[in-house]
Image (cartoon, rainbow, N blue to C red; front, top):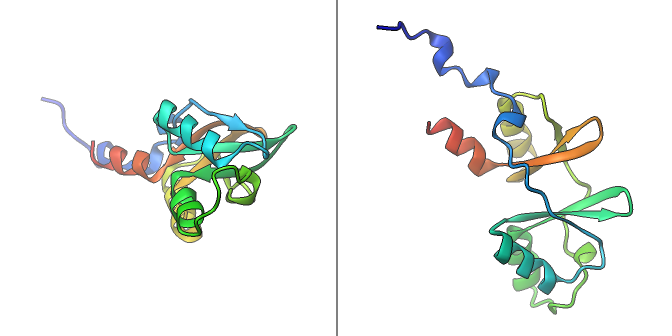
Length: 135
């Protein structure tokens, strides 16, 4: 029988890239709230990165819809640049998930873009962290 060591229960060694979602959708700032909502529904996702040319300018989340669009009765043709969360907060792909949790807690956000040398390679969410802890 294998002996379990304390390290087997140590989440501090898990890197962000090991549990992040790699499927990413990016849109330009002129994309409308309605188009974003349809993309989220069809893709079964809760966050889309906003890109202006080569620059990552923000993120739009399902929560942004509830707190900005729905709560303020904004028209569905509102461009995403008016409702996105900006600037985009990122974490390095090789950071520990404990660091991701700390950033989310401090910034009061639930989703973090993951970067590798300036390129966005994925997204990590508070749900990803909870699922990892539940394993």
